[in-house]
Image 1 (cartoon, one colour):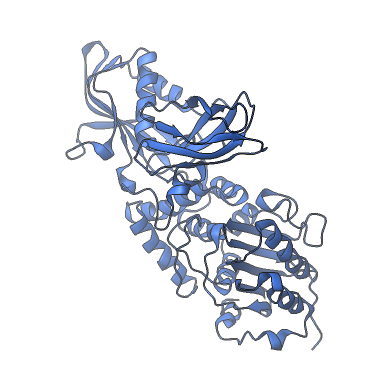
Image 2: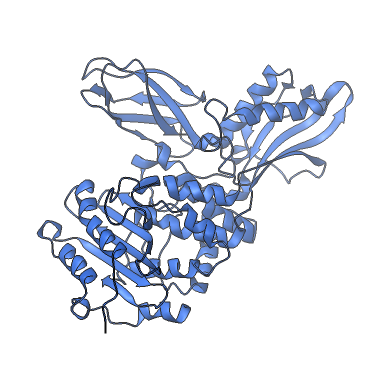
Amino acid sequence: MMTALLRLFVVCFSSALCAQYPLQHTVNSLVQDPQLTGTNWSICAIDLQTGDTLLAYNPRQALPGASITKIVSTAAALSVLGPNHRAQTQLVLEGEMQPNGIWHGNLRIVGGGDVSLGSRYFNQPGKELYFLDEWLAVLQSQGIKYITGQIIADGASFGAFSCPLGWQQVDMGNYYGCGAFGLNFFDNTLKLNFQTSAAGKPLLFKGMYPTDQHYQLRIEAVAAAISSDQTFVYGVPFEDARVIKGKLPANRSAYEVKASMPDPERLLAELLYQKLQAGGIRVDGGAFSSRFLQMGPFPADKKVIHTTYGQSLKDIVFHTNQRSINLFAEGNLLQIGYKCSGSGTYEHSLIVLDSLLAQWQIGPCRIVDGSGLSKENRMSAAQYTQLLGVQCQQSYFSSYLASLPIVGISGTVKNLCKGQAAQGKVYAKSGSITGIKAYAGYVDLPNGGRAAFALIANDYAITGAAITSKLEPVLNAMATYQAQPE
């Protein structure tokens, strides 16, 4: 199959040569649509059994693909780590036990990059932070009543830089723009609660969960005669000052806006400190992130007293692609660097990714994050279909395929092609940022075969809803494709 797939890079993809086929006619009509003048396209579909090109338009044009980038990072994570991999978070005591329940030393929370700790996707509402009670019980079982040192949140193995190249300030203050750290919890999200009054009036801030005592919010947003959240929170990692701008629906007694945590590691240490104090364990040294502490070598007199295991990678990958969770995608990417080099930084993780893409014979491309939030990514439709074809040969393919939403039925494409020919026959990851719309995945063909495809549109001048409706006929045409007699 690999030889057949590599035809993508040597076949002449002239639209004229394929114009006799109804499927290619559909694509030709799309790219010639007067409303889409100026749009940059990269389109490709191949039959995975024969290697034949089913449709093509600028298939080797590398473009940003928004969230279809997630099919790259999830494939890489499954390949390097395996579907059953579980990231770990450890409680480590440094020092020595003294009489009367006194621990002379520090308590360190050592992060292994788990993105599922306290996640709303894996816990019942209101029970996301129950792991803190478990950690309290562990320390109580050790007979500890008093810690003379500090609680230290240590995510140092994943570096100090949590957001990749090309991420924007307008994104990073919001829940979908939170970075991945060595220690992550509660989806690295703060729930900001507001009350709104008449249109044009300022918002009234009612509090947040979990409470971050360092968070400083300037409110420039107002109430308006609208029905949905139109706010953005501006800020960058490790800076506590944030600004919320935009509009919320008027006359609401309670309205929740999700924002990113400035420093999840610091907040986790502080919440554990509060939990221990309330549970009768005194901590003299306070709570800190190792990021801002002047620390010497990791002490030799340490012991791991508890390990919290994250959810399985296959379950994280499922939610990553079904719900398009940026945090999970970034965590998946950083995990491969951590596994292969002991360093979960972007520098090391992208080296591993580039090596893997070379093994899969993807060809030169540019991937700078795991989620596709960066517009610096560049990958062509032909390269996406090559990657999708290679995944079919892997032992983890069932987990990979199950993670992709089904058009018209599930995930981010549940309303796409609803009641149309493609419903239930296309497995597709969607991608959408201002000026970018993309779909990539697999199509079950009428003859029992399967095709891999990618549709990428950039720089269109119509609305996102309008470009979606114009792409639906291509998906429907692929789902009903019949090979033409020679």
